[in-house]
Length: 246
Image (cartoon, rainbow, N blue to C red; front, side):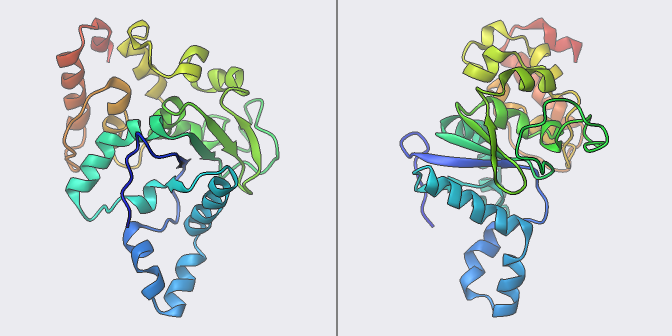
C-alpha cells in the first residue's frame, strides 16, 4: 500500500451511493484468494464501480484514485476516525470528483423531478438525498456526473441551475465551495442537510463536520448525542446564533 500527500498528489476521488461494496481487507487479499472467492468479489457491483472509476481516472490522466469503500481500513478505529475527520479536505483537494448516479439510465442529467422513477428520493436521483454526498458536492472544485453505465452526463459548473434547484445550495457555493463561509449561516448549511439520510444515525453529524470546520472523535453507538456534540463544537468556534434554530 502507498500513502500519498493529498496536498501535492494529483488524484481523482469517487462519490457514490453504497451498495454491495468491496472493502479494504478484500482488496488487499484479492490476489491471494481462491479462484471462486475472487470471482465472487469481482462480480459485485462495487468492484465494477472501482474498475470503471479507475478507467475514467486513467482516461483523464490521473495516476491515483481514492475510493472510500476500499481505501479505509475500517477494522482500525483510529484510521476510521482520521479518515472521517479528513474527508472534507480529501474531497476538496481532489482534482476531480466522479459522482456516480447508479439509478440514472439515461444519457442526460435529469432536468425535472420524476417521482415515478425516483419515488424514494424526492423525485431526484438517490445520490442527492444521502448525507455524505452533501460535502462531496460542495468541497471539490470539479464534479463530473456519470450515469449507471458510466456515461458522462454533465459537470457541476454546467448543471449549476439544476443543482441549486435540487439541493437549495446557492450557485456561488456550488462554484466556490465554502471559501466565503462568513456569508453563509450555520442554519443555512443545516437546512441543506435537513432532508438527507444516513444509514447510521451518528453519520448525520459526522458527515457535516467538514462543512463546519470542526473535528470530533468518532463514537459509533452514541446515537443522537453525536449531533449534540457537533452543535457544541460549532458553538465553541462560532458566534453564529442561527445554530439555535436547530
